[in-house]
Image (cartoon, rainbow, N blue to C red; front, side, top):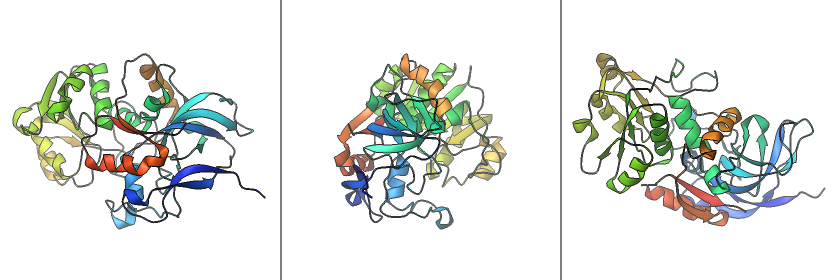
Length: 339
């Protein structure tokens, strides 16, 4: 039996960007409830390089078992090429976008860095017509992360990061500080907070001030010259899109009864201090959700929410894209052009 092939980025061992290889790979076979998408663009996200690196940042017990060769990536925009027999909500030729099988695909099961990807219908939404494939591909994981942290979880799965469910807090009339405001999740968090009626303080390097004010920030702190905790006080909610050990310092910016939402909660070590200050610290795991992407697509379509693209690379140059990501200071998202 002849196996159809496609071009994809794969890696055969863990390592740095140099392990990413552009090569032939089997074209996905459709299962019931799936759609085959001809990929036009791929948005890259931190889990892509976590996977490539073997999830060294996770405790050993949390590290997923990866089978080689693996194809990284979750976020795609493209055109429906085929549908399973039981699919009725999409048709060949539809323009679509998705975050594919996440977090179920943590071990490489999402397979987005490729000419074709099979996508469960529940993960899929029609691409907003007001933006191109590059901008659509840049949105799913980062936008869903901001939305699920700040507005609505969209699921009732157990929280792997804490014993209780994550609960968003009201934003209207509140003061919201966004750290890492120019990055993927951060630039969406700024816009969502403003959309919901908050006073928004953006924290980023000085070169990003103009962009963040255009996106709705009411105040700006250049962290390279000023420690946010020295000047921001009585904040209701901190969205820390950087996360890690530095999250602890933001407790000083919050009022009693406020909330701290670290997007990357590993490394936070000030739980006792937070409890003494009466501050809620909470996180969640973003999950694929086609219905939410459908709703968010309307906001992308009419320009209510903007997608900022830092840079683009051909799929074959995924290694260079990962090298760019490793340099940090990304404004918005990095995208791979596929078709």
